[in-house]
Amino acid sequence: MNRFAPYFILLRDNHQFRRVWLSQIISNFGDWFGVIAVFTIVLAYSESEFLLGMVIVSKFVAFAALSPFAGYVADRFDRRMLMLVCDFGRGAVVLSFLFVRDPSLIWLVYVLTSMQMGFAAVFEPSKQASIPNITTGDDLVNANIISNLSWSIIFTTGMGIGGLATAWLGTDAVFVINGIGYILSTWFIFKATIPHERDEATLHSLRNPVRGIIDGYRYIFSNRHILRPALAKGTITFFLGALVYMLILVSEEILMMGSVGLGLLYAARGFGTAVGPVLIRRYLSDERRWVTLMGLAMIIAGSIYLVVGALQVIWLMLILVFFAHTASGANWVMSTVLLQKRSPDNFRGRIFSSEWLLFTFSQAVSVTCASLIMEFELLTLRQAIWIYAAGLLLAGSLWMLVVARKEARWNQLKAKQEWRREMRQHHLVS
Image (tube, rainbow, N blue to C red; front, side, top):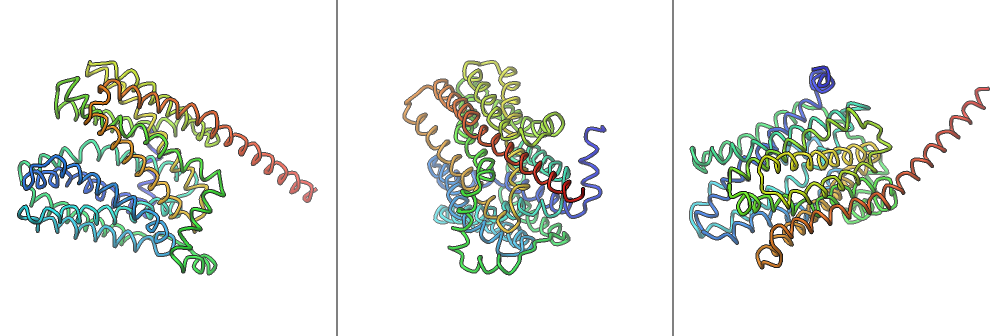
């Protein structure tokens, strides 16, 4: 129980983080709870698998297209107010799905889905950029572990509960519950106090949106100690996104277990992403090693999926998928914490939106390529898994050879600078 004491203490004592966290739980649950209902109305009015796939594509496109502007907005305006507007907006959007009553209005699904993800594109960098302003030191790491653990639990349960609710209550009831949930989450944000100080120079530089966005990218690429962790999620997702997508086909074609097998595999994935950050916090807390560990996480996940591609035993697959995503979950939290600590507040929104842009783009490309490979039977399912797993293994190896070495040199230089500073201070005192 003592292992989890720091997390309970943080939630008990830090009222601001607790309110933001409760809002995140409700919002994240809403993101997954309504998915099945949206899929259901698309199939009911179109019976088209292509149109069903376009719902997912519209999510990716909307999030990626708005990410650069979302980061600028998160740095330019009050982040607490942005989160309030975004969650209230998502509530109104979800309730608007009730207007889709016949096939002639199917286009409205894609408009509303895009709007929902547009609000999410602003909410996420605003939330992540705010956490360092309401937590400090070790609490920042613990806060991100709590957030990731919550996401993992919601991921494994939200869609399943939403599916049952859709079957038992109908799509209209699900949309009403989902919309009310988003609006309820605004109460917790409203009660939170989230500092966001910007000096006159920062506000002046952000007067022009185009200049503000360009300055953000320029800052990221000119500060390689920020660029390195910003690349981690996009790099691993470029291969892991397809592998997660292909778990659907593994359940159908290899395990012959349909939705039951898929639910088990995705649950193993969710539990893995929850455990990974906790292990990092407990056993590998030296942040100077984290960029190297990101590459190791890619190698571990790639190696495990190479084995998964050769199996057809469900219990063994579940164990391996769990460990693969333990590595990916650790990668996620390590990169998030380093970005939060290394990024100045006046650039943090743009930095996180850029990271989300890369992550979303990598996910979209990865899944699209894998689906085309499967659609045109260019490779067998096992061959495709092996190729993506080998690609992830190679990416991790290159990361260790290039990115991790540059990080090590930066840490050495930083240590020398700190030593010289201490020597100068000691000399002045003497």
